[in-house]
Image 1 (spheres, rainbow, N blue to C red):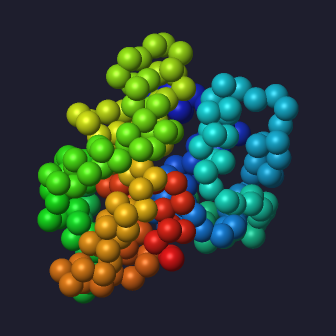
Image 2: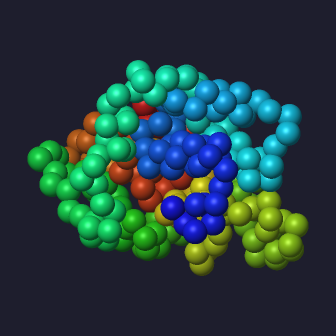
Length: 234
């Protein structure tokens, strides 16, 4: 936790943990049918319906609204597995390294061929032409994203406060939920462009014929468009 987060009330710390979990498993949860979030903090069930919200809570509600979930209460005495993991007596965070390699026994290549062959990686290196130009040109035909780009190129304090999730990387628009999230290239509402990306990642021979979940996971690491998961299922 960040120093400021350590000073949060217990209630907000519980919500922070839920928020972190949603971000961590975003690629699997966004666009899915209703899923359940279990908590041993009973008040979280009604927290998002409270008429008295702090500014922090209001920001978090905007984030939570992107997911389709219900919060269920599970008393701590019935939540033995989770508590056992969090209360391990041999756990000492000071002994953890900054990076731990996790072996992958899956023989499938999880990398999206589009991301590799077109010069895109997890740090949002810009796509090379002609894809980059195709994306940039498509913004002009999408009124919503074209307006956002105009606002970012001529920013005011008011518009920047409302567009905290968006930024410009040259002629590309990027999107990130917050500081925990890696910026991703926004793909405008162009069916041909989105189909091309899905094809390169899923159907192309070099793509390894990834399944739906891996296609979504690979694409969503570097690209963003609303309801991506649903469009990949088609």
